Length: 184
Image (tube, rainbow, N blue to C red; front, side):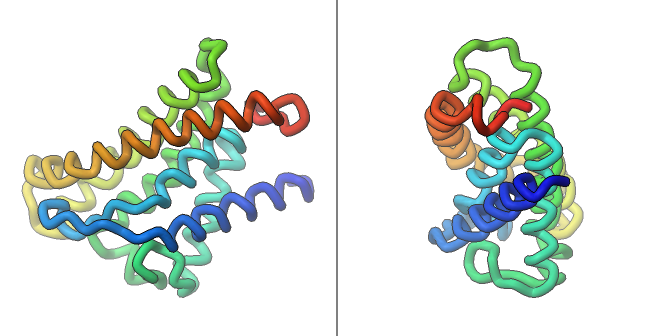
């Protein structure tokens, strides 16, 4: 990995951490899974850095959290977060960033907004929930159906984050794409 890539990976890991400073919203029906701004950072990492570097930045962030840094929304950190109800979503962030980045590379749309929105919805919402919902069911003792209902309460916020990602990505990619190699 080149120095430039290490810096970009580190910057996006820091961005995800900084988004943890935004207040979290706890929905009673969500079974302990908060609505946070950090998924926005995961989606942006995939869109802007691509699959490999985006997933690497999320993995770096989660490594720092596992080491005890209280960077998750609400000041959470340490190994305990990887056994609680949010653990599946956290691990899903890595896969989600990778899928978002991979989709950005292959989507045929000329509009960066459309490509980023579709990639963010599929990778940043569907894939993350695909990891998070079964873990939520297992860790809380909910049925998979009830865990899916609890997980569905997060979808409006996730959709807003996907739209925000598309707007940010469109501006970034139109401004810096040739110099940054964002779709590479």
